[in-house]
Amino acid sequence: MNREKVDVLVIGAGPSGTVAASIVNKAGYKVKIVEKLKFPRFVIGESLLPRCMEALTEAGFVDAVKAKGFQEKFGAKFVKNGKICDYSFADQYTPGWNWTWQVPRAEFDKTLADTVEQMGVPVSYETTVTGIVFNGSDSVTTVEDINGNKSEIEARFIIDGSGYGRVIPKLFNLDKPSNLAPRKALFSHMVDVNRSQVDEPNRITIVVHQPGVWIWVIPFSSGITSLGFVGDPEFFKKFEGDNEAQLRALIASEQYLAERFKGAEMAFSPRVLESWSSTTDKFYGDGFVLTGNVTEFLDPIFSSGVTLATVSSQLAAHLVIRKLKGEAIDWDKEYTEQMMQGINTFRSYVMAWYEGTLDTIFFADKPDQAIKNKICSVLAGYVWDTTNPYVKDHATALTKLARLIELEKKFSTQP
Image 1: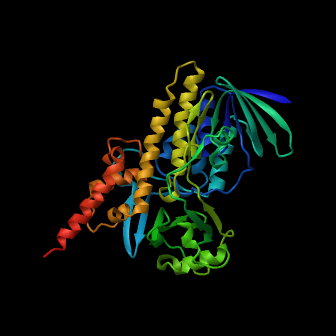
Image 2: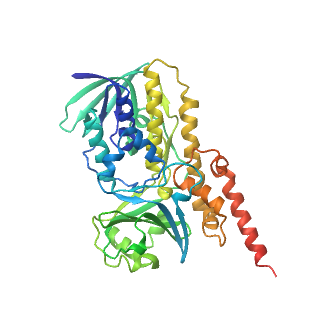
Image 3: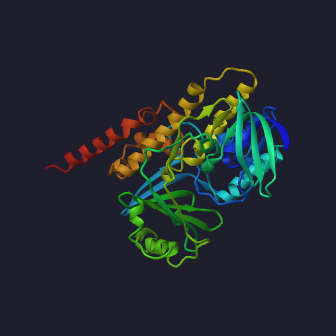
C-alpha cells in the first residue's frame, strides 16, 4: 500500500479545512487535504458574517473571492407582520469588518479550495477516510479513492474540518446530542425575476412567519435568491404534496413573499435538512483537533456556521504550528475555552430567538441605539469581544433586556 508523509493532514476541503491548510502551509509545513466529495458541491450556509473576513484575509483568500463578484452583504433585516428591524454592520459596537458576502456555497467553497491548491497544498477529492491509528501525536490515516484504491498518509498532526461528515467524532465515538430542539428546513434557489432595489439585495432578510417558524431570503448577485422555511418538523406536516408543492404553498401563505415569488422558477427541486444540531465530547486529542461544524453545529438562524468554521480553523492552525515547533499547548484553555465562548454566545441567541426573547427586543417600539449596536456586533459574528456585555453576559443580558422592554411597554400604556 502506498504511503506518503506530511506534517499536517487536513480532512475536508470546505472553508474550515482550507483556511487551516493555508495558514499552516504559509508557516512552511507540508500539508495535504483529503475531501470525500467532488467539488463543486451544494451546501447551505450561504450568508457569511463579517468576522469570518479576518480569517479569510489571513488565509489569503479575499482577493480570489472578491474576483468572483459575489453579492456584498452589509447587514441583516428582520421582518414581522409589517414591522422591520434593520441592522447595519456599519453600526456595530466592535471594531472590525462591516461587510461580507452572500454566496452560493458550491462556487464559494470551490474558490477557496482552488486557491489553496494554487498555494501548493494538494487536495484529493472523492477520497474517504476509512481509519486512523494514532501513536502519540503521530498518525497513519487510511484513505480510499472513488476507484477503491487504498493508501496511507503519515502525519504529525490532523486537523479535522470535515463538517457534517464528522470523521474523527464518528471513528472514535465522540459524538453526543445537542441540547437544541430538532428542526427542519425546506428550501430552494429561486429565479428572482421580481427582485428590485427595494428588496435590498445587500443584506439577508429573516421573516418571522409565525412563532417558531422563520424564513431566510438571501439574494445572490446572479439574480438567484436562496429561500428557505425553518421550523418544528410537525409544522411542515400541515402542507400536502411533495417538497415543491409544500414550498410553493408556504410561499403563498406568507404575504411578504407571495407576490415576489409567485410562480417563480426553482433552480433545483426543494431540499430538506433536519435534525442538524450536533456536538462532541471534546474538541481535540493527542494528534488531532476538530474545527468548524465538527465541533458543534447550532442552527442556521444567525448564519454562524462559516464564521465558527473559519475562526476555529484560524485559531487551530496557529496552535498546530506551535505544537509542531515543540511548544506545549494548553488545548483546553487556548482552544476549547476560546471556541466555547463563541459557540455559547451564539447558542444563547439561538435559544432566545426560538423562545421569543429576541422577538421582543428586535421589534421594540423605541430601541436603544447603543444596545442595538452591541447586539449588531453579535449578528456580525464578533462573539469573542467580551467588552460587549451582550457577549460577556450572553446567558442573562437578553432576558433582562426583554423584561425591561416589556415593563416599559406596560407602564407606557397605563393611564
